[in-house]
Length: 377
Ligand SMILES: [Zn+2]
Image (cartoon, helix red, strand yellow):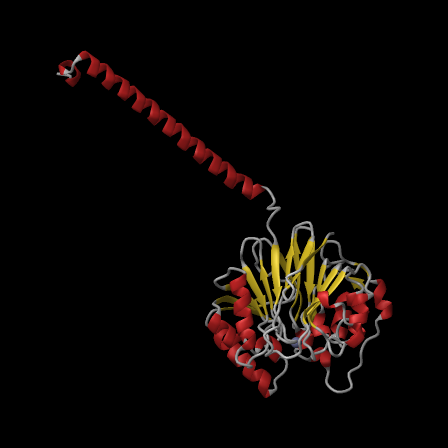
């Protein structure tokens, strides 16, 4: 017997109404859930086909007092570090790298590219890896310089890299970095022979560049001359970073034809050393913004500062440090991250942060003043 039959008439109709309401509520719930699921599906679909216009490619040029350490963060949050600065000084540079990693909200470094085996690039890997987990290591292969100090640095580096994952790169290779194209343009003394898109035209600045003759050591066959150089492409944005590549190696890459074409951002070579940064490179790239990783007393050569300032298309030149060598050739202080000359001064160790979008608009923030300036394409 149905339970309704023993209920008074009024109660039965109330019960029936409640059942109808519950049924209607269930239908609404079902419809709402289906709509939410459909919208979520639509958002995933759109995010995979539309360019992420609001996402930026970020970088921190970390102050390693004239060494090199550049932290790169792809729009998807993947990270790449190029070199780890100097060893010693109470792990100064390892601490500064860890600070930049934290500021970028990263828990690890996905890739560490060691451009070459000089102490200001590879000497600090042990102290850095002790503070920040590093997944994959990239380098140019065997050291070309066999002096005791380099051999020691390479041994310490390999002990860490080979325990994780080590990849030897050659010119023409790509380094995986989600959302960014990373082309190895130089490595182990070789360079790309096929021009990239937009490159390959005769370089008019080769006529202003004479080969250098070395009187003491053969600089082109040093570790510097074998450096890993990288071209980064993100939408319309392009950046070239040749680490410490030397003058005649630059000419081999850039003359008589320029295989790169123009770039938006130029990482000044070799801490602003004048045995690098030839007119064939500096003028031939037609960059808009340049960053120099010099120290207060480590390079930042006056002739290089002058060439950069007068380069065609130049919009801004930023320095890690005021260059004592550069004297009157220094840019105004707003373009310099560190103006103190003692690394123990609490005001020292400031980075330059760069944020670029796919339209090649470049925003540079001076870590000392926190003032940002945007350079539009
Ligand atoms: Zn160096």
